[in-house]
Length: 158
Image (cartoon, rainbow, N blue to C red; front, side):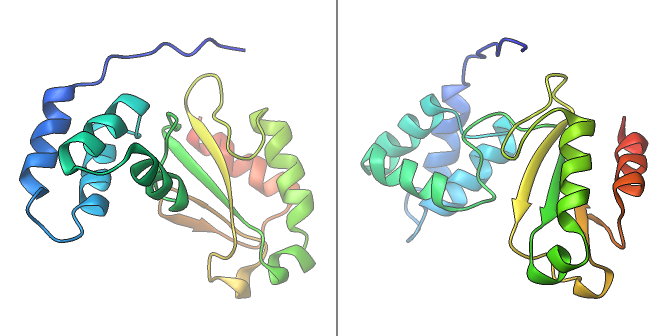
């Protein structure tokens, strides 16, 4: 397994983002979103700077960062592969599609491929039940999938 190289956090950038939002009511969510947009994820050091800058406890900041599924406290892949696990997808064969994805990518849910290209996530519902089973890669939905067709979709992104 590839060893993760720790990059230094640009604390001046994080401090600038915090300063921009500090006086806003409910600044934490916009600050976390902007920090993640800038850094690609929310590393521990950035969360500590946000907590300090907003006068919040680190546990509160970390709790918010880990509660929302669109925040990442670990580096994510270039492509987010979201697999729908709703009842309609399940009934239409989502488990076989999931098994094919796990085999093809070589990672489980919540993990990123060693090359940093793909992160695999499960979601409750993509809202496209008419084309179940479905996955979303970035903002594109793929439906009516089979184990073979989902592997072909992944190959398009390699």
